[in-house]
Length: 322
Image 1: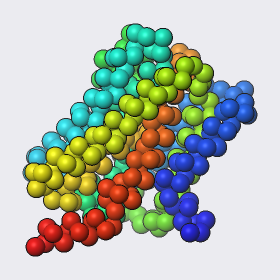
Image 2 (image 1 turned 30 degrees about the vertical axis):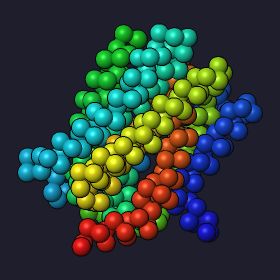
Image 3 (image 1 turned 180 degrees about the vertical axis):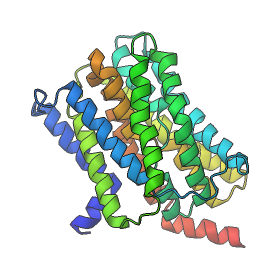
Image 4 (image 1 turned 120 degrees about the vertical axis):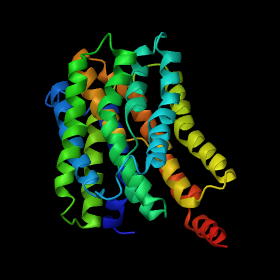
C-alpha cells in the first residue's frame, strides 16, 4: 500500500487525524491564541461547507422524486434521522443533570446530524442500493435544515442562540446543497476527490479534537464509548439481523445499515463549535464527539472487513441469484 492509497483511506486518515490531534492536545501544543474559539468555528464551518458541496455534487438529479419513491424516502428518514438519533438522545438525558452535563451536550449534535454523505460512494463499493442512497441523502439533508434546529431547540434551546443555529445550518448544509447541484455536470477524478475530502476531514478533526478539554473523570469517557458503540455496532448489527431475517436483499441492507449507523461527524463538529463556541462549552462538549470518532473508525473497519467483506458479499449475492 503506497502513500496515495493511505491518503484515499477514510479510516486511515481519520485515525491519523485523531492521533495527531490527541498528541497536539495532551502536549499542550495547540495554538489556541492564534486559533481562538471564533477562528476555529469559522474554519470548521468553511471546510465542512466545501466538503459537503463536493460530496453532494456526486449525487445525480435522477430518481429523486419523493412521491414516486415514498417507501424509500420514509425508510431513509426513519432509519437515518429518527432511529439513529435515539441512543445519543437517551444518553444525553441520562447524563444532563449530572456533573458531566456539559460534556453530554456533545451527544445532542451527534443525534441531530444526518448520516454521512459518503453513504452514496460506499453503497456503490459495497453493492448497495445506489438509487436509494442518493435519493435518501439529498432528501435527508434537505430535511436536516429543520431537523437539526429542532433537536437543538428541544434539548438546548434555553442556553444557546437559536438564530446562530439556523445560520450555521444554512452555511453548512443549505448553501452546499444549492452549490452541489451546480457542480453535478463536472467530472472529478475519484482518487483526487477522496484525497481532498480526507484532508478536509483531517483538518476538521485536528481543529476540534486538538482543542478539546479532556479533563475529567475516566468514567465519562467509558460512558461515551458505550453510547457510541451502541449507536454504531449495536444498531448496525441488529438491523442486519432483522432485515436478513425478513429476507431483504443485500443491496438494501447495506444502504440501510450505513444510513442508520454512519453519522456525519463533520456536521456534528461544525454545529458544536459554532453553536457552543460563544458559550465556552464547546471544548467540553467535543469530548463526546471525539470519543464517538474513535468508535466510528472501528465500526468502518468492522464493516469493511467483516460485515460487508468481499467474501460475504459474494456469498450473499450468489445465494440471492439462485
